[in-house]
Image (tube, rainbow, N blue to C red; front, side, top):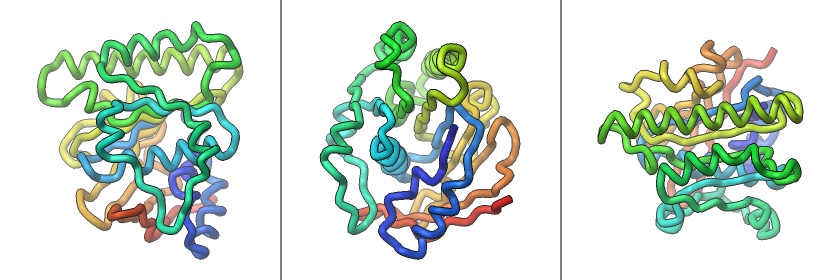
Length: 236
């Protein structure tokens, strides 16, 4: 189950908190999602907000990333928010540096003992592992990795029931020019960051290959912190 409020729930703005509380009611029937946008658009920061909120709520969270990239650009938190070190410790950081190890890592998740199976897997910037434009092999390897993730979710649903697990990946590419048809085959939800400079906008490209019925739009800026400026959606 994809909960968009987890991207924004750490806000310290009183007015926005009321909006986020309403957004908590918005739940999408999805086991996999991708956040797509150009380099430097805030994908990592949004992904880590989701990870922190899930860990705060007691879920088993894995955050997969390249260690060197994380050391260069650690995710930002929202202004005046002080993260709890105990919650940060509950985010299981999985440092993986190459695409072969990543594919094998995901393929082997179903072999783990039941209590070690994560509720949430976040993979930061697939384009670090599979650079777009370099070769068709990279694109094929990425699709194979996404297929492994989908197989994991099918396994999880059979064994534990629907919505036991969720994966969210970020991918660095231009949301205006790339076709998403291939990605929709492997990811239930595609979210895009449509601006390359402040203010930016996060919205759904598709959810289960359909338009977002709630028409969610979140406007934010990334400077020395994450600033959520507005959140709009249509409630039922």
